[in-house]
Length: 116
Image (tube, rainbow, N blue to C red; front, side):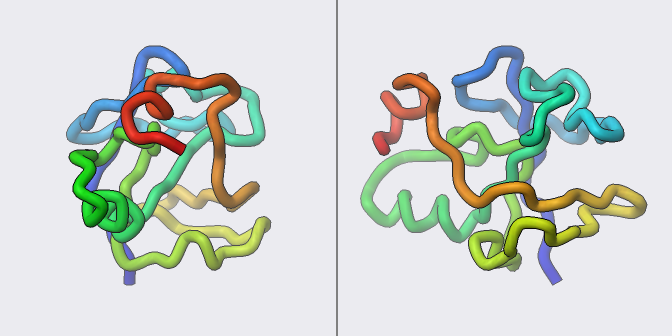
């Protein structure tokens, strides 16, 4: 069973997110007070801590939220989940995978900090 290691939000799009103790999941919108919340297809971003560890092994100092993920997970092979998969995050919060991976629309803060 997987777990959530970090909940992260940001005020603006294209920047690193910062850790918060918790955040309210808004139905069909994303996380409360997060710049990416809204009526879009990608409202919530998940990233495995295992992926962050791969970047850290390359001697880059990165932290949870640095890739603009809302939830940093552990023990879930997110990259293997096909689109349409439903994942129970906590209690009655269920999310649906709509895409695997994301990229900056333009070179953003994250790209300049950690590269491609």
